[in-house]
Length: 416
Image (cartoon, rainbow, N blue to C red):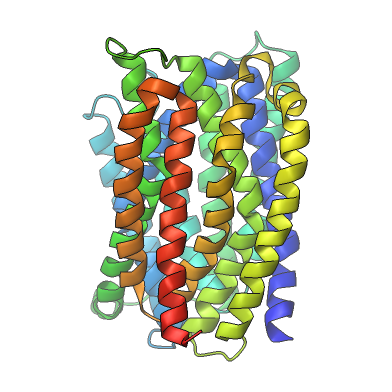
């Protein structure tokens, strides 16, 4: 009963967050077109790598050790704030000297980078702290609310395309991340009466979490590459198509592929909710997350997602261009090739969270390396022949390998 209560509490908040995120992505696609939105989201992908590197996955260590009560709320919160603002300033300055990170020239690039990095670090760190306290609504509800100004502005811009000077929309978009992080920080700090602590105490907290965080960082970095490496490979082919036969990768095709990848996230919102619940329960030794529960969850999630995917497969040919625009006519077939991968990742999300809670992150690392190697090899083999559909097939194969490895370890550990 406890597991069901936690899942229900996070489910509706995840629905709201996923809906607002879908609207943001769809409106950006409508406003900017396939090629423009592809370039924009490619930049966001680059910045997301920076966030991952800057975080060193400390949020995983903070959440794990706060769940086990090895550190205090005060120490975890203070380290989160100091790390978020300190490293966002350093990395935002560094980005100004690294060509190719941002796809536009603006005198405000420092502030755009700072808001995105600081906001995402705060959201990531404080989400982990809330999850450790078994609070699963606020980490999703707050970002959903801060997405609303972006949705309102993009909707207005859709009907008034000539009024944006190219800067206002960026301020609103990137500012929404920083706003969400600050609101989440304020809510947690006030609820748990967080005050300032000394640098010595901060170092003690960092020392306590660093080993787990570094292991989680390796797993998260590999997982990020598993899900995003094809962006860079496809973007490479848009710049050098001299040996591509018969497929040529255009900016339009890249935009279509990125939107398919984002569409897949809609099918993963239930696994994501469950994963955020499973991790702290498993870490704290709560009996609500037994192997039997995990098996039931995997079966039910797979069945639900299979039904949803069949609906999308039947209607997507007409719906995708209707929602995103005429330039997104390549999405449908690419989505069909990704269906096996969606079903595999549905289960990977849950199993990876389960193993992370057991401090068996090494399983996630090995599975991720296996998947990443397969995806990279198949991308270079299939993209020249099949374009973005080849990338989708490569992803499906890699995700399936990831799932089979983790499930084999799950069965072996639980003698199933």
